Structures are given as structure tokens and as C-alpha cells.
Amino acid sequence: MKKIATLLLTVALLLSLFTAAGAVEAVPISAPLDAVATDEIPLAPYSIHLNGTIQWYSERTDAFAAWDVIAIMAAKRAHIDISPVEKRVKSAAEEIANVLAELAESGYWANYATGVIALESVAADVSAYTETLAAAQNENGSWADDLASTIYSVIALNSAAVVENGKALEFILTKQLENGQFPWYDGDPDVDMTGMALYALSLYSDNEEAAAAIEKVTAYLLESRAETGGYTSMWSETGYENSNGLSVVISGLIAADKIDTVDEASFAKILSGFIRTDGGLAYESVDEGSNYMATYQGMLAIADIFLGESWTSLLGSRGLSCNDSAFVSERYRADIIRAYELEIVRGDTNGAFRPKSDITFAELVTMVLNLTGTGYKSEPSSPWYAAAVESFYVHTGISCAEFVDGNANTKVDISMFDKIMGTLNTGEASVSYGSMSDILTREEVASYLVHLYDACGGEISFR
Image (tube, rainbow, N blue to C red; front, side, top):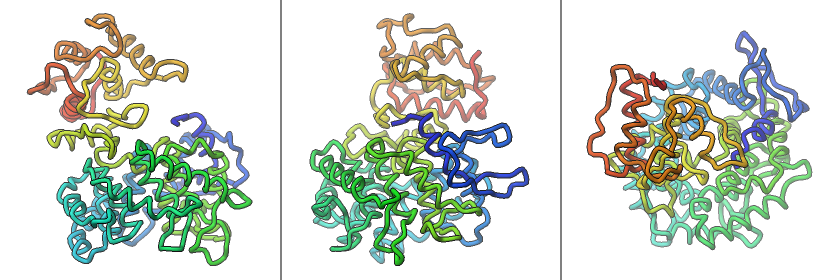
């Protein structure tokens, strides 16, 4: 799904361009799909628009809410500079933490779960909050007998590597209508909720019933597009297409790994029509000004398109799905989250990390290249690790052939790890190996590399 070259082209329409003075100018909707960065506009196309939304946020005077935090942090993971609003994001996270107890007492589980997700997006310790959330699950698997509350709660728990008892999936499946849709309320189906349901269903994709439900949703979304390719909503009083539904559908299809079943380029082109000159997105295509909800949902969709994975997989201990029994050890949890933030770790081709698995030579040298910021370009026709292994050899002269098994899947013991660490120039900084296993695990290595990065102040290169 991570066809970055294609994705950059499909997102090329999603532009609000910066002038030298910092003002924002909208790119015409008719801009070609092969629009690319130029010397005058050196940012990648997706970056230009996300930078526009950050500017839009910087000019807002009201306090940020949970969804604002989630969207801004998604932009950060897409390599966007959020420094103009970073302090306000931190303040918002602190305020969210302060009100969670009140929300729990009031039984507002949709807002509570969204608050937890926001805290997870800034890598906060949410263990106490997820314990409260898990305890609030009803016997029928729901939270508050409400689909939205249940979807957000499942996302929050999954991101914190907390496995719910499976009843949430049963509840979600009972809400699906025959045509594949999901309703906000009984009898009121809507594309927004249908797209949101894909977030949760994707976490159970190994379950046959969940997989079947995903297929029904995908079929519905393909068949129900408006004449111009977007979606209308039950909330619209005019019947015009709106960006909210389209954004949620894009993110939902990416979460369920179904985005390739639709014409992604047309989705991007349609979404570009909602971009306004202030950097935000409009709710309906006929609206002149930008809209708060449309903007944060659009940010999530654009970041998802670029990254090739859903914002829901970029939270907390990301990649730890409801079906993954090898959850990260608590002692390493904060380090794993930081390893993802620093992009030392990016997960495997399925987006999973499997922290307790033994690490291989290929995986270790890939992490080391990420740590040093050394580029390597994978070829679709080659194994995923080939370019990284070759790049590491070029920089260090070390190949997997030097070790016992002699292949890229050789498991890393402490002597191999020591030799590979010896290729790094870390100045006078050093970090103890501590009590590492004889054969190292992914979580041990990720934790070590994070501590080494911090000890060196981020200044690490090959000797």
C-alpha cells in the first residue's frame, strides 16, 4: 500500500501554497495530478497543504480539543513542523487529562475515549485511563450502548496494547445494516459512521466475520459515491457533498487496507476542492470559508494518504493489534513509542512490530540506518530488506555473510550487536547493554537505540 511515488501524485492536488512572506494561496482545483515540488516551492505537495493547516491552527485563538491534538500529531508523524502550535498541543493534552475523570463519572465514554486517544498521540502514559475505560465496557460489549463510543474505546484500548474481551466486535457487527452501512443511531445510517466503523473493524481483520463486514462496507462505499465521486451526509441540509464524509472514508479504507480498491487519485482530487485560502478545509463544496471539523478530518486523511497507513495505527504502542499476543513489555513501552516518533522503528510490511520477537540482522541494520538518517531506496521487485542491507555494507563493510547463518534473517546475538554498534560514531557517549538477552528482541534493541540517540543528542553517524 505504501506506493509513495503514486501517493505523492495523488496528494498533489491537496495544496495550499506558501508565498515567501508566509501567506497562503490556494492551488486551483484543476491543477494537474502530476503537480510536483519546484525550486520555488521546495516542499513535497502533501507537506504544503499540511503546513497550511498548521498555519490555520496557529491563527486560531480558542483552546485545542482532543481531535485537534490527534490531527496535529498525525501531521507531525508525516514529517510536518508543528512548532508553531506545539506548546498549545501540550497545554491541550494537560487539560484533557484533567477532565477525563469528570467525563468518566458522567458516562461520556465517546469523549473519554477520544481524550485517551489524544493523550496516546502525544505518547502520554494512559495506563490508568485505559484501565478505567476497560472497566466501563458493558456486558453486551459496548460502551454506553453506543456505536461511536464503542469504536473510539476499541481504538484507545488497542493503541495502549490492551485487549478487550472480543465482545466489542460482536456489538459492532450487530449494528451493520444489510447494505453494509453503519448508523449513528438506530435507523440513521451515514457515510461518516460507516467509514469510522472501518477503523475498529480493521483491528480485527484476522476475524472472518470482521473481514466479511469490511468487504460489505467497501462494496457499499464503492456503490454509493455521488455522481461527482464524493459523498453526501445525513447531517447536510443542502444535499451537497461534504469533505467530512470523504475524509473519514479515505482514512477508514486505508485502515482496512482497502484504499487500492477505489480510485484514490479521484478521492484526492475531490478533497482538494474543499481546500480554502486560509489553509483549512470547507465542510461543503459550496462553502466559501473553512470549517473546524472538516479541517481536522482532512488533515488525518491527507497524512494517512502520504504515510500509507491509518492514524489509528500511529498511536501509543502502534502496530500492536487486538490479535497480537506478544505485547510490548511495560518497561520498554515508553521507549518503543519514542522509537516510532524518531522513526527508528517503522514496523514490518503489515505495520506490526511484534516487540518480543527475536531481531534479525536485516531488521537491526534497518533500525541503525534509520537511527543515523542514512537513506536507502527499496525496489518493489527486491526483498524489503535488500536495499538496507546493501546500504549498511557500503557504509560499514559488514554483511550478513560474516555471521553464522550467513543470511539476512540471522538472529542477532550480543556479539553481533556489539560489532554493529561499533560501526557508529557516538562521540564520547555510551549506553550500557544492561541485561540484554542472549538473542536480542526487537523491543530490547529499539529501547537501546533510543537511549543511545538521547545520549548523543541525536548526533550519530557511521565511523
